Image 1: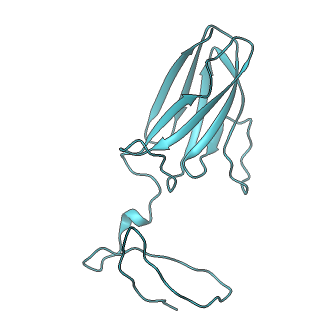
Image 2: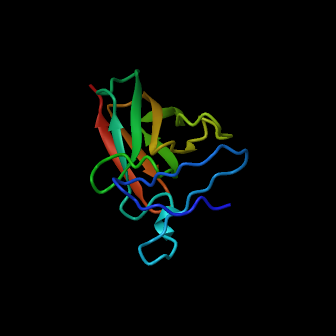
Length: 148
């Protein structure tokens, strides 16, 4: 049963509906009435992987690395979730994952899906330089950190 169509004002459309058990589905339409494909996709070609360490690495310590999906404006793309794969040189990957409360993925595989555009890697620093490489279907990004 359709709840109708509403105009988008301040980036949202407001519907008032009575609660009924079942599935609720929202669909976006362009001004000409054609269903917007972008509303059905997660990430686009402008989304990029950003690797950021939480601290300056020290040899023998655990380094936490934020791995986020960011848009052109540098903001985290909370509606874009992608499966990422992490590999390292100069360190050992202890865990890689996201805060997704409902997943069958495992932290020790090196492959995990972001949750609201975010993920985190725990790395044991074993050398003076640690290089973290993150890949998805469209891109590969590497960043090297110098340990103190």
